[in-house]
Length: 243
Image (cartoon, rainbow, N blue to C red; front, top):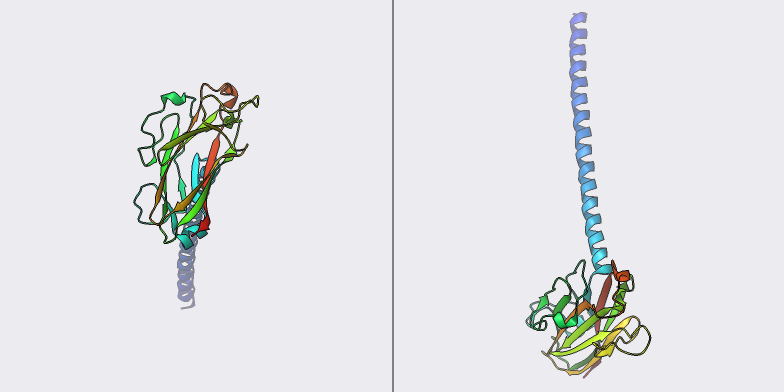
């Protein structure tokens, strides 16, 4: 009887060991799968962050309004004249590997298409600033250079249409003798492209803006040294008066 009991005990021990081994193996597999899922999740988050960081730092053009102005006064941004939600930030699509062109070769309908409508060698973006509040306001807009590499801004041109009225901006000539011949105005400063002010902006009023950015091939500063350069512009709006 004692031998039988010992044999039964050994069988139970073997079964227990086998079960324990299977559980341990299953645990290892589960932990490996969980570890792999964590790695994949971290990679996805890192990629999303990198894309967001790259877009924010090197993206072509961003429009912003003060969130306080949006919440308290109803000022909002939209890619169309009609809007169903308020926006405080808009981003234009990036153009990679932009080559220089002549401003004379740009399409004639750049101010007639909403949202991003880039070409191979230019950035074009149309948006609307809308007074969705109940007060008449005055606002200021400022377009600035937020990031630039390889001095690419030396040959860049920015055409700004405000309610159909076009102005072309460029940096002052390298020799300091004034604006380029194809420009209507010089950049306000080394980091500011332009500033404007709009008064008596009544409730439900809409101002249409189109921004076009390109490298002017006829600019003497448009040389091989600019190859690989990047440029990011931003335009900020804020309310300066309420009536």
